[in-house]
Length: 105
Image (tube, rainbow, N blue to C red; front, side, top):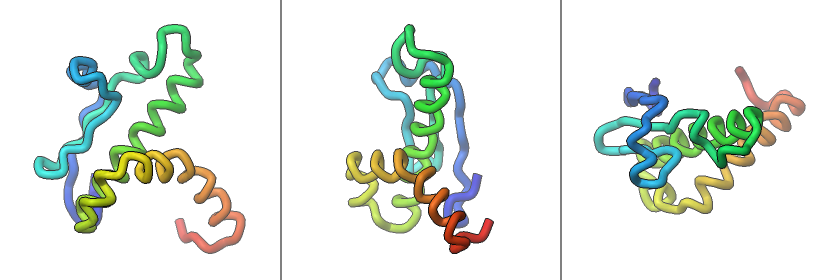
């Protein structure tokens, strides 16, 4: 996938992330995003829908880290609260932009 003109690899279902208690990781220097398996998201008793939503949110979160890295905004990339907020609110932002016809694509 291209992030601001830079090729990033995406490794899905990376079970090694369990070892560091992470659902995802963006490696800005090596240009790789890794994400855990959907089945391992949240708790064992979480529904498939909840796991799917968490998976998508984590993937957005890691992509946002990559965008900040490629923009030269590493300080923002280190702000987990900001990255989380954008990842959680992005679908709502897109919906409003589409409603207002101010977003191409």
